[in-house]
Image (tube, rainbow, N blue to C red):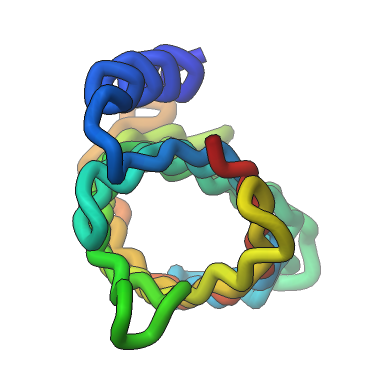
Amino acid sequence: MRFLALLLAVQTLCLGFSAQAQSQAYVGGLAGLSVPRAEDSSSRPIYGLLAGARLEREWGLGAFFLSSQKNESVEGVDRKFSFDLYGFEGSFHFDNVADGAVVGLRLGFAEVSRELAAGTLKLTPVVFGAFFGYDHFISSFFSVGGEGSLMVITSEKGSLAGVSLEESRWAMLNFSLVGKFWF
C-alpha cells in the first residue's frame, strides 16, 4: 500500500513536468536474482516495479519497489526470510554518448521479516544503494533491458518475546531483466 502511494506521488510529480518537451515518463517491472550477504541467507529470486520520468534529456526521478521471499535452511530447519525495499531514485541517462545506458542512486526503506525460533522479527531499516542498467528500445513506447544494483540495508534494533535483538547491516547484489512502458 505504501508503494502505491509512493507511485502515485511520483506519477503526479512526473505529470507536472510533462509540459517540458523532453520529459518521458515510464512504468515497468523487473525480475531477477538477488544475492544478499545477510546471516543465514542464500541467493534468491527478486521482482519489483519501477516508475518515474526523465525530466530533461539526461536527468531522471522515480520510485522503486523490490521484493523477495524465500525459506532458508538454518540448522536443518526451514525458516522464512523476506524483504521488501521501496523508495525514490535519481538517475542519469547517457544520451548521445551511450543511448539507453543509465546509472543512479536509490534511497528508501526496507521491511525485513526473519523467522526465528522465538517468533518472527520484523524491522523497517533505511536502505540505500546504486544501480546501473541499459534500456533497449523495441519501439518508441517499450524497452527491455537489464539492471544491476548494490543495495545496503542499515542495522536496526528490534525486540521479540521481550528480548532486544539487532539486525546487523548487510548488503545485496541484484541482477534483473527489466521491461518499461514509456509515455
